[in-house]
Structure formats: structure tokens, C-alpha cells
Length: 250
Length: 250
DNA sequence: CGTTGCTTTGAACTAGCTCAAGACCTGTGG
DNA sequence: CCACAGGTCTTGAGCTAGTTCAAAGCAACG
Image (tube, rainbow over all chains, first blue to last red; front, side):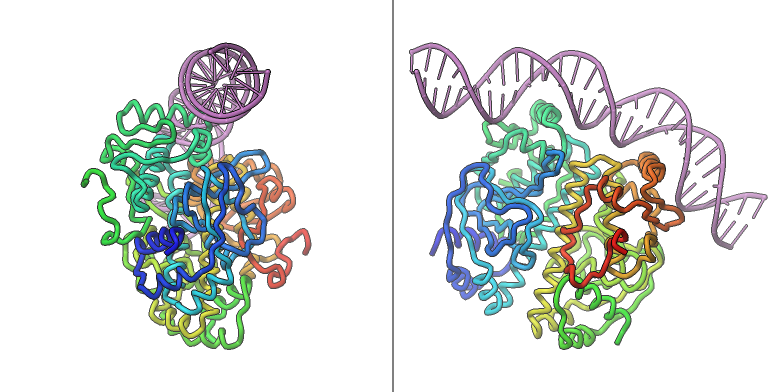
């Protein structure tokens, strides 16, 4: 089976049941594989989309630019995610989709995805569920942006990124790659670049984690999680499927 | 036909096609009508939900409380909305649902909704679309919380509230009721109560709008909209269905 | 009329911003 | 093999949007 579909199935299995027939149906969807260089745009704000983008390798992000040049990053997507699954029923994009690192993506035509869903409604429900989890993550971030200060926001971001990387099997123990610059970080957290730099130094000096050369090292998960008040339940994964994503339990 | 279902159908018609059969199917869903007093909790954070809540009269809001007592309000819901439609596929609540004003709500059992969707997949797609629009609104708010200052955020909130009230047919010209205290306002905007008060005075003194006794009056829509950089496209309504929601065009 | 919830005001304080410059690092062309 | 260019990170310093604390005014309601 295709590697691309394998990562999608892996992702879907962390949030719900996928039968052998479901897997076969997913595998039958025609894919158009493409490479996207770091920073490359995949779907632009305002565009009418006719396909969905499955991340196969690298990180994709969603963002919106404001007239004054400020950019807000909404989410980061590791392999297995379909960041614009919503375009299936909301084809006019209200934000941008772009590559955070050099990426491989697979395009699934809306028509093909809809055909599979029509055939297998339970798979449709699972994909629906996936978009709902996406929305739950937005709520978690609204809470951070509206009610937490910079240090906690940053800690929360690394907690989430670590958890999601682990769910996708991309961590190596307490370490994982996160291809962000500090400018990106500041655009996620809604703070200035200078303040992002200082906040990161604060986290480092507290001995909770490190982030260097795009590699995150979790040093003190329990404390980091406590500082962030991180509760992963908004990610709505099935505990039974996700092994031990908490390094404290490793 | 039931008044409750009528407002739901009205809402769905603003975002997609609803056939006569669809209307009949929706009308067949058993309802449990209930009154909820202002401030009353409808579904609590962490609870397992077995039904969805259709707003029939009044305003419902979604929020999350933090351990330190800070509250972030995620969204406001006029009649016709089903704020927790997501609970259909994500039954464990990750936030609270409560009444902003004295309310009438109708409860639709998940099982009944699922049965209708199974019967009429196109209706399922429309409901899916509705949850996607919900997510789009979260993105719009993340953008405000992360990248706009208080004055613009507040202007944006009133622009959105006015647009949504108009979509639901709840405005009277440039005026509509919005049952919020300034404390609520501050919890939506992620600013302090004191600052919310001063920001509101700023908007008033600029002659853009007024908000008094829970009644919003739009005085200068074009300027308000420009200040907020408000672009309603994230609400994803069908222009053909929503008459003239822009008072400048009335 | 007294309590209760909401709004308004003043004033001191601070988290985070902007501006500006220097350090560092990596790839490229001479 | 060096030099330089462009992107990234770090630091200092002054500034401001927004916070907190505290108190007073106001309106509705029993």
C-alpha cells in the first residue's frame, strides 16, 4: 500500500475505528504526489479548492495574513494530517496553506473523497470527526491567545507539538524535530519576535526544555505540562490506540 | 411546523440547499424543549453528551474556565444555531455551553440526528458544513486575539454579531439586542473589564456605534467595518439567501 | 431604601512592543 | 579557501497598550 495512505490511516486509527474495508477504500483514492519547498504555498487564501492535501512528509501550516503585514499561524500539521479537509464542504479558502519545511504532499480530489464517503458513510463520520478535532484545537488555542501569558502559551505549544509528534510516531524519546524559526514561533503565539526569543530563553533557563536547530528536547515534561496547564483531551485521541506518548511513562 | 425547527431550517438555508424532503426529515426529529435561565449551564466541560442543543430563543455561549479563574468565551449563538453539533461525533465536551440570556432550547438526541443523516446523506453534508463554518469563525477569532489590538477586536466583535443577528433576522434596522455585560465582553475579547469599558467608550466617542442596555446600535457601519477590517466571508453564507445584511445597502 | 450587579473613573504598575544593532551561521561564487 | 550575503538569533533600551487595585456612581429589584 502507498506510503502516503498509510500515514493517513495511521492518523485516523488514533481517533477512531478503521476496518479493513475502510483501509481498502482509502487506498483506492487516486493520489497526486508533489514536492513543495520550504515556504511554498499550497493553497492560497480566497482560492476555490478542488482537492484536499494530505501531508506525507514534513510540516504544513495554516495561516492568515493581515493587511498590516501581521501573520497569524493557526496550526501545524505533521504527516498523516489533511489540514484542508474542510475544503471538501467549504471550498473557498479563508486562509493559506503552506509548507513549513520541504514537504511531500498528496492531493486527493474532492470528487474522489466524496465518492468514498458516499460508499462508506462510517468513514465519512470519521473524517467529520477529524475536522471537529481540528476545531477543538482552535478552541484550545483561542484559550491560550485570549487568556494566557507568553510563557504559558509557549510551553503549551511545545506540549501540543510533542504530543502530536508522538501520536504520529515522529518523536525519538524526548526529542523531535519541529521545523520552526523563532519568527514562526512568534506568529503562532501572537507575540513579537523579540519577546518570543526571551520567552524561549526563559523556558530553557528553567530547565524545562530546549529548542535548538529546529530540534525540541523535552527535559522536564511534568513541569512543562504543569506550567502550560496542558491537558491533551482536546486532541480527542483514543487512549487505547496511542501507546505511551507521555515520556514520564516511558 | 414547530417553531424550533423552523429557525434551524432558516439557519441551514443561509448556508446551503434544503429540499422539501430535507425539511420534512428535520421536522420529524423529536424535540425536548426546555427553558434555561440566564447564566444557566446547558452542557458542562468534561461531560459526555448524548444530545445536541438547538437555540430557539435567546443567546447561548460557549466558554472554557481556567484554573486561575479566567474565562474565555469562544462563541455566541443566536436562535437557529446548534452550538454543540460537534458533540455528535465528539461526545466528550471540551468546554461549557451556557445561557447568555434567558433562553429556550430544544434538545435533539444524537441517535435521532444520526438516523436522519443516515437516511439523507446530503443533510449530513450540510450539517458537516455547519460545523466547518463554526471552525472558520474560530480561526477568525484566533486572528483577532493573536494579531489585533483591543479596539479592532471589539469593533470586529460587533461587526460579526450584527452580521449574524441580521442573518437570523434579529436586527431592527441598525439596532439589535446583544445580551452581554461588559464583563462578558472582556471575556470574549481577552482583555480586562476596565479596558473593555474604556475601549467601548472609545468606539462610542468615535461615533461608530453604541452599546447600552444590551442594545447595539450601529451608527457608522462603513467606518466600523473598516476599523475592524471586517470581512464576513469566513461566515460562509450564501449571498443569494441572505438579503441585505449591510445597512449601508438598506 | 438596602442589597446586588453593572458601569465608570483614577492611578500606579507591568508585560510585551518597537527600534536598533550586533553576533552567528550557512551556503555561494570568486 | 576566503569573503560576502542573507537569514536567524540575541541583546539593550525606551516606550505603550493593557493590567490591577480600589472606589464610587448608578439602576433595578424585592
